[in-house]
Length: 609
Image (cartoon, rainbow, N blue to C red; front, side, top):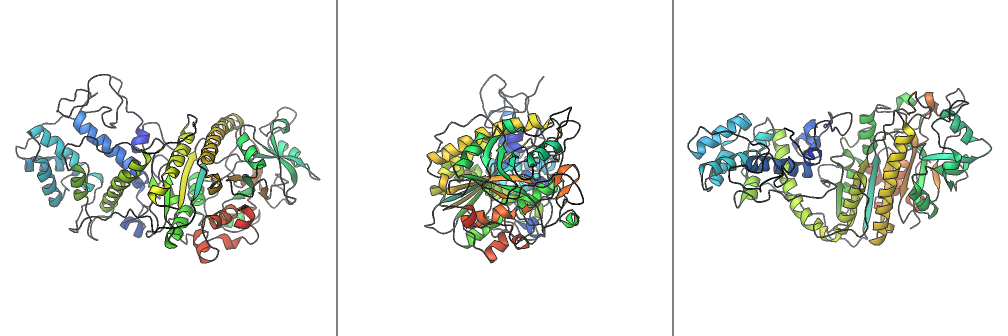
């Protein structure tokens, strides 16, 4: 019989044969954003997926499994089996299958003890046993009590960790405040991550260049010869833009034909590029590039450090958007941080900073729809009340994350359910993420914020084979999503208040491999867009030579370019526009920026207003 576990990746962050990356579901170095594990810098890989949507998803699924069997009832794990309704009567009429055990105990205390042994190896605290017994004793019959006990125990931290829990006797406090009221105008910052390492020289290519013919050098390094056209963009297929920068080796450049939105916004002054940029701790060339901190060309390390922009770990475990949010909070600017694509280090700040929201692109389902007992949410919170300092660190991590998730879910769902967008978004995962960003922006006043930061991502850029076809498909999806997002921001009259910045862990080799693909490299081109930008310019410095030689200080083998400009180049002016002052605030947000004199842009250079 075919058992369909429906969209498990969206519900719990894991699914068979559906890894989010080559590193599976968990990051081995992941440290939770708050709590004792963060303070002690203890890695907790499973906490990678311990965010609000997935906590709600797995708990909804567990409740559904216990009450209805394996089905789609109330956000259950399975698909609709095609018959019957959802009834919490112990008959499991709509299920594909169900949990079957007849408890040996005859009293509710004996049943709690038995389920505790089965699900927590007996670790369930006496305090939680007493709470569960009292809550489930009101159920009308023996079977209903047994189902109630199972539901409450799967909400306990003893079920989700191997630690014991020592309660302090106090209620757990969940901070839902965003700060003081501010008269600052609203601004939104969207971080678009193209995952896998984008072939960004296929996004922005040289066109008309003099006195050096950079285009011919580009086509040659991309594999053009008498037998093959290679993988480089042809001049006739490019969307041409003026570089508007006398420092560049080319007067015009070409954008990939599947990204017309970039050409349109660039020509309108609402988009710009920084050429040959990348993750750097200090300026380097071919003679000393190995002293760059971090594991060059490695997906996981370059991804993490691109999101942190702190290679010296001055603010260990934090990401750039998390640090921005922390500084803004300290200045009294109410700020929220969201990821629409899972837990991301870019949004992690200091413990006293702003806790990030993690939500799915499809929005928020009901939590514990049709509860078995009338005060069930209250009982769940009581089971996960505040703990003592000597309580298990990982037990406390789950208890705090669950409490935060329940509170955040309740508040945010109420707001999101009340809004919608005016623009029709295309049917794609990335477009769904942008649509959710647009909906969240509509809730800014009710959330009481003047600053929002968002993380969205698109995968599929690890193009070791068939690069041209794969990138073309990715760019088509990207273009449609960006077009809809820009249209919606214009409709909401927010386009001048929003900046989108695009990053990827690295660029790719210009020299193709034998499978018409490109491999891991370093420096590349990236873009930003927004109505307030002083766009229409290619900043940074596009390479005029791609071949490794004794006279080329920036080219490694196979056309791997050493960046001329750091990620800090775009970030500094963006952060200033967003409210970060130069000096100590900027040193917190961009602790490496002073290593690059003359290679970063301030707000006056990047923005027209």
